[in-house]
Amino acid sequence: MEWKPKRFFTPEQVEDAMTSRGGFSRVSLSKLGVPWPPPKGWRKAITKKETVCDDAASEVLINDDPSKRTPEEWYALIPKLSQWAFKTP
Image (cartoon, rainbow, N blue to C red; front, side, top):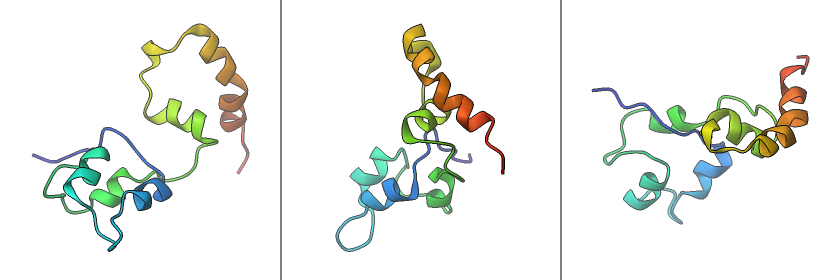
């Protein structure tokens, strides 16, 4: 059975989970949602491909359960999400 990540993280977040010796413990991997032993390619699989916009909006787009947000919270995110949606390359 192939493992697929349930959450995505920035490269900095993944690096912050590293031990002082440059590895990853079972505990730090479990916080990232990675099983033990870690499957091949796990780090690439959990890392965001690009920054969508600021952290708050990218959390909504990638990791959030939309049913848990109030309408007011969604309205507050409209400027950030529209900035991302209409961004020209």
